[in-house]
Every structure is written in structure tokens, then in C-alpha cells.
Length: 154
Image (cartoon, rainbow, N blue to C red; front, side, top):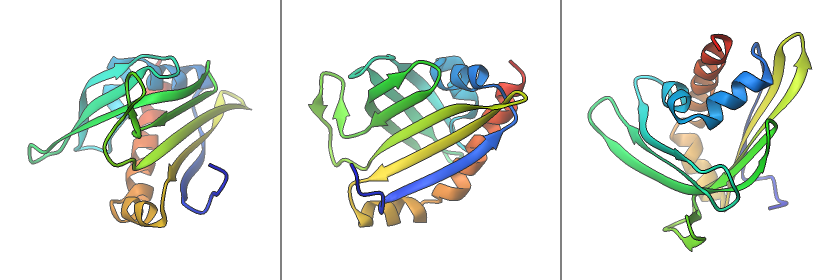
């Protein structure tokens, strides 16, 4: 995807080392602690860290809402980059209506800090707008705050 017009981006410097942030993204028990902005939370995370490997969880809301979230990893650069999409299920099976691909990068920024960029890449302007209206900036921002706080404890 070379057209960046349908991307939503969270770009921050986090006060936590890259290795700790990576652990929070790649260890299921840690992912459960920060991945959704509270009071939302995830359960049943599956992280098969290889291209085509499953990346899934159930997103749970404060009123008992449950949203299964299924996708796969497209690219993994150990300690530095994760790319996922919901366009496929494991086994490269097409999966419903594709909403987005995501890319998360981690770059050392000195003094135990990390330049953290989370990019949601949408197939259409409509999907991007839908994600914005769902609260992308606030939700992903709060999740990044939770990620940073957890990573500082590791």
C-alpha cells in the first residue's frame, strides 16, 4: 500500500525501553494488560509470531460486549516491527471485509526511550473515516499510555 492518504498514525516517544515495549506486544499475558483503552479489555490473545501466523483476541466492553478480532501477521522484524492485517485468517484464508493493516515500529531514542509509531492503514477513505469516528486517536492514544506504563514495570 503506497497511498498513505487512508492511514491513521500515532507517533510518540515513550519513556520505556524498546525491549520492554516489544515484550508487551508479543507476550499474550502482557498484551491483555494494555491493548484496549480501559474499561475495555481483551481476552484469549493468540500471537503466532511468524508471517501468516495468527494474531487474534476477543475485545470485551464494559457492558458485556464481545468482538472477536482475527487476523494474521504479515511481517515481523524482531524487536523492531510488527505488521498485521484482518484481511486474512490463518492459512491465508480471506477473512470477511478487510478493514485495515497495521504497522507498529519501535526505534531506540536514547536514555531508555523509544520512538513508537503505530499506523493503521485502511483500504478505503470510508474505512479510515469509520475508524476515526470509532475514536482512533483517543483510543490508540490511551492504549499507548497503558503500554508505556506497563513497559516501565518490566
